[in-house]
Length: 145
Image 1 (cartoon, one colour):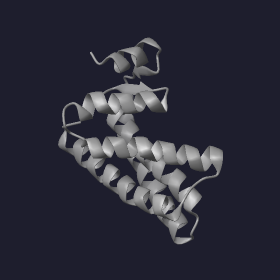
Image 2: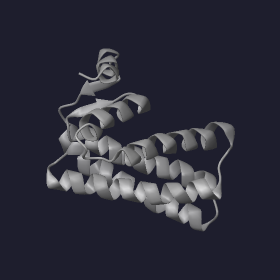
Image 3: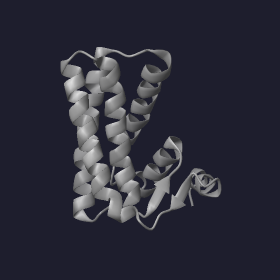
Image 4: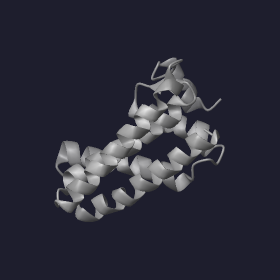
């Protein structure tokens, strides 16, 4: 077992969650809504909120993937660890998407906590969040998740 994943389980930052599969569609809907809001924010030149909303779109897509395995996260870091274990190691999600999710987390933290963001970063995240949502949706519909 992956040592980081094992540590997340031990610290109860990742837990088994029997209701997970029942909440997958709710998480995907939230991801879609966040992405739509991010596009509106971008069109209004609000790049800080675009950045934050893109990250949360990706977060909810990732959470849907984790819920499909009947697990739940209690840490954004452990959610990424779980994605690598369940989807990266099996090559269901490309390393670029998983790394992009990590980058989105960093950009969201910079926007939220340090008041640092850019139009270019927001634009890149819009594209990434849309890809992440589309691939997550396809995985979940194909039962590969």
